[in-house]
Length: 247
Ligand code: ADP
Image (cartoon, rainbow, N blue to C red):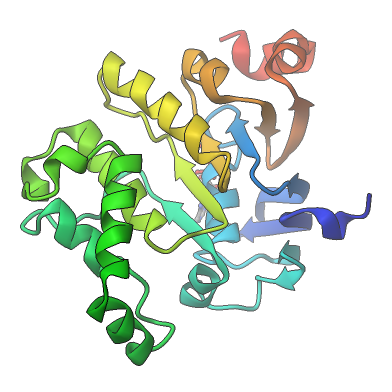
């Protein structure tokens, strides 16, 4: 199959910071509705890769095609419109707003004020809020102020806020950091459910969690792919053991 069949095709991607190549000639492909886990040692370039895909950082060289469209020339907000949602490690929720209000303000208005107003007037927005709240396990907390949620619930709310924009690709940087064991389990289930509807790229260090969610794993090292495949293959790869898993 040709590379145009992928939802996301990253080719020959390089970014240099003062001559240091944080990403170095990377080729990386993600299918529709795929859940991909990216692992690798600190400094491997994992966060930088997500920064490049969402447009926060612009590459020195190479291309990032999303549904065949080149993203590297688009500003960050346009990349969101294209259907790319990025969650950072620190949740950017509005503490003084309720869960419902946080979801409501996340509905994309950039595509046209009139569209957003028309949407708001009918039942559709409310239905969408209820649906997304259920997906991210917050349907019992719709009227709770976001600042009062548990750490894990705040992370889920931010995922819900991204889902309000109906992204084809969701990118999550260490989503379970700081979560309780129960919240981690629920997050694994949540991501497995979401993967049927969206493509997801997850950066993760917790190998138990990776085993629960990872179908295909990409191991980054020094800005390039060291290994790629299912968890068992990657775990048995001596190069991966040497630079990452052996520690
Ligand atoms: P990882 O997420 O795998 O830990 P990063 O993508 O954060 O790795 O970083 C990869 C390398 O690029 C690191 O050596 C880091 O110091 C460097 N780096 C990342 N962003 C910048 C930047 N804006 N300026 C300079 N160096 C950077």
